[in-house]
Image 1 (cartoon, protein in one colour):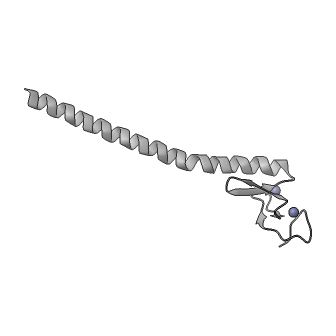
Image 2 (cartoon, helix red, strand yellow):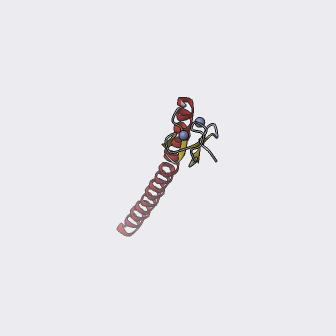
Image 3 (cartoon, protein in one colour):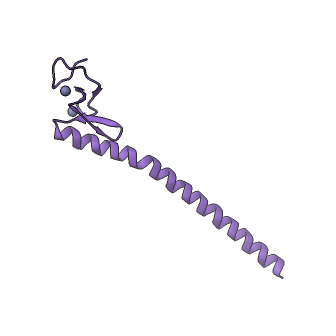
Length: 89
Ligand SMILES: [Zn+2]
Ligand SMILES: [Zn+2]
């Protein structure tokens, strides 16, 4: 597969937006995806896509983990308070 922008140069990847073959000089790494270095529309779309994927996964899992820890801690606290009130009498 040859680079779309440089005929005769072997391509190393494909643009995530337009699907054109890219060599090392023509590609731009945006997160885990590649985009055309020459095409700003490709860069904009690919960077948006990579940000959405890159941000959402760890962000949501971290948020869920914190939420679970908070719920467990709150439940433990409620149990402790109930036990304290029962044994205090
Ligand atoms: Zn492109
Ligand atoms: Zn190229």
